[in-house]
Image 1 (cartoon, rainbow over the protein chains, first blue to last red):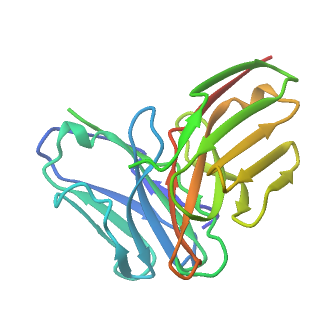
Image 2 (spheres, helix red, strand yellow):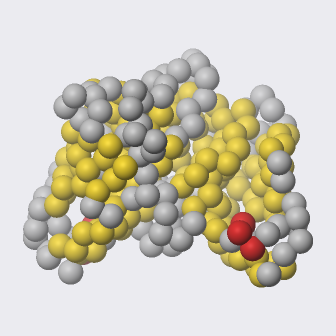
Amino acid sequence: GAGVSQSPRYKVAKRGQDVALRCDPISGHVSLFWYQQALGQGPEFLTYFQNEAQLDKSGLPSDRFFAERPEGSVSTLKIQRTQQEDSAVYLCASSPKPGNWAGANVLTFGAGSRLTVL
Amino acid sequence: SQQGEEDPQALSIQEGENATMNCSYKTSINNLQWYRQNSGRGLVHLILIRSNEREKHSGRLRVTLDTSKKSSSLLITASRAADTASYFCATDGANAGGTSYGKLTFGQGTILTVHP
C-alpha cells in the first residue's frame, strides 16, 4: 500500500479483555517496529522485526504483550488481560532497510491505534 | 525509557517568526532525526543528520548537531499556522561497529503553536 495502515484506529476494552492490533506495513519493507505512546509523551520502543524474525522485544512491558509477524509482512500486537495502564496509542512503523544496515533508517509511521482500557 | 530531553516543552509564536527547539541525548549515536506529529496522527519524518555532520538544511528547516555536547537543535524559519504540531527528536544508536540499529529512541517532544 501507499503507507503504513493500522487497525482499529480506536479500541475501547474493559479491564481484563484481550485486544489485537494490526499493522500493514509498506509492501516490501523489511523492518517493522511497534511503539507505545502515552498521552503527552514521546513514543517508546516495544519490539522490532526483521522480516518474520523478532530480533528485539526488550521494550515489551510485560508478558501480557505479544507480537508476531509470521509471514514477514502484516504484524499483530496482542495484549492479554488488559490493564488501565495499557491505555495509550500504539504506533507501527516500517522501513525498507534491515536494522543493521550501514546507512540510516528512516521510519514511516502509521496513524496509530488508540487503546482505552476502562 | 526516553533517551532525549527536549526544550522547551511548549512554544507559542506568531506566524512569520522563527521557532527553535532543542534536544539533548545521552548515548553515542549513528544519526539523529526529527519527526513531526499532528494531533491524533502518526509521526512524519522531517530531517536526518548523521553523527559526522554538524548542520543540515531542508527547505525552511535547519538542524544542527553537536556530538561533544550531545545536543541538537531544530530551527523552523518563517513559521506558518500549518506548522502547529508536536516535534520529536529521535536518536538512532550506533552498534559496536558504528552502524545504525534503526531502533529510534524518542524525546518527550515540543508542542509548537503558531498563531495566524
